Length: 409
Image (spheres, one colour):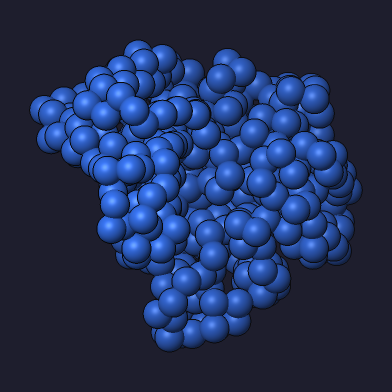
């Protein structure tokens, strides 16, 4: 890409940046918390703004029964396509569903307040910002007059917080899109080319209730659950011995994040249920990880044979592994980002999981990059006062525009 072309894209992004900020603010102001996962209104707001920009927006509502099976209320995925000519199809994916705001905010989580150059609001960094990044990067390309070949698609989806199966996975499985490569929403300056996988299991321990004055007449489900929990936490210590070769990922992790049970203080608990989260590094085999956990639980449960223990898989998200094609994309994004930001931007891995894996599962090279502060922590992602520096939004938009121009040039 020539210096003149880069300068042209810089100017085009800057010309409409106030409109881009207004677009992002409008998205933050419409709640799309997941759970509960009632996201159709947010999709309609996004579609309306995109149509004002001159895009043709395809609305793809997911069937209600399928949405319900995934624990949500409404999902309408959006697709925008712009064809410049014969050539590769590049998908840009960001998700509009967000975690609930929780407590501790100093600003209205749906207010989109701008404080000292930062916009504050739930989803402003993860990842409503990249609705704006990708849309306005494509808008700049449309107005650039550059001789491009290929198609850019926006995939704006709504179930990342629930696993992505009725978002990108659904778009791809239904044949709505068949991209040749993809860029997925980012959350830091770095370009992400690999990430952890995740396994969620629900463990239910069933016993028999009894009066607390006569506990021996019952089967204490909590007593039976205790050695299982102890074995899981002992396994956490073992996992620390393994470290991924991918920078930024670290070791496998296991956490019991949800637990419920019992009837009353004076009753022997007849049922205890808990859910665990097992993060898998790219080097691990998900099937082997799940079987090892099931064996660990069964072994610990043997200490209380009178109790009944069942294990159910809730989620299995495969790790994202870097491929040679994805690495070439990553190098290109890093080069443009380093130039725009005026500091080295490098590729890395992250210890969470994202919708990007769903593109990789279809053999589509994918990397993650978009607007965001230098780190997830600086963005307050998934915490109170989630925020985005607006100058970073403008720069990331330029990076995406330049990257697409080179990929389609």
